[in-house]
Image (cartoon, rainbow, N blue to C red; front, side):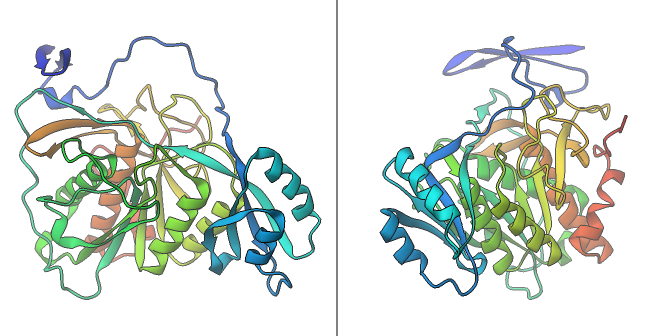
Amino acid sequence: MNFALLPQTNGPARLFIYRESVYNATQLIQVAKRPKPETPDGKPIPNELIVRLKPGAKESIDALAKRLGAKVVGRLDGFNAYLLQFDDAAAAQAARSELENNTDVESVENNFSVAAPGQLQPLAMSSPSSPSFKLAPPGSSDKLIVALVDTPVQSTRAPWADYLVEAVSLAGEANPDPNQVTHGTAMMDTLWDALGKTLNDPASASLGFLSLDVYGNKSTTTMFDVARAIVEAVNKGARIVNLSLGGYGDSPLLDNVLAQARAQGVLLVAAAGNDGGTALTIPASKPEVLAVTSGKPDGTIAGYANHGDFVDLIAPGASVILYNHQAYLVTGTSTAAANASGAAAALSINNHQSPIEASAQIPKLRGFAPPKRP
């Protein structure tokens, strides 16, 4: 075993222990904490309700909201689904009772928060080299569109910037700190790296990327906004949707969106969660989704990573990315999901298969494995 004690400008030195290179010191050892509950509770947003109207409802959603003293703050018109916001929890609860007895209403459900990923920590080490490859010219037709539902991406000087078809903000204008890499940027870099390692002929691969920001400047998003982003991605032609996020709390609306996206041949890839237990993370635990957890080099699941029957794939849970000439170590099932999405896109092009068909080939790649069932 080797070790390196690396100083940091704004914190204590960090100790890396590894066999071959510092890049392989990929499991973060945390100070011991109390064990987390096996099934974390999703916390509903107390003053919000998701309402679905029946086709041909006599009362419009705007009239209904006005009568109930609510605001319509989100719409999924294709699903007749709307997000209503009330003054407080009591008003929402009172409205729920009325909505559940309204013959125009198909369903009423809670909206749940989904926490934003934590900040990434820079490494005090020599910078890694960026993957050096180019895809087919950005103007190529018949692109395979890969969508990233995440925090904002920072495309300036990024190797994938020329292939970014569109960046859509569903949570208002975001102003990320240019000195701190965002989670979305790290996931895009990780996905790009997986592409470069797996494509047979990058120069002939026609790909485009779609960024859908569901966080903006906020520390959380919601199940409603995640569902809205998936609908937006599919409507814009995405064939692969990467969801390096997750939360707890059932959402029938999201279930419906996932089912329709899968029925249209879209590969949905999501992170299994970093609680280290068997809790069912949403959306990863849904049957339409390829649930990805983090693996160690020996093919076993990382200690921090969620596991269980809902997990479909073990993928590398660490990557080293470069942003503003600074190296960052990115770990977690978010990284594993991005690696799987990049591999699926590459295999789809290599083998002339649909992304769903190509995803079955991922476990054959080095560093990927199917989970072992009891």
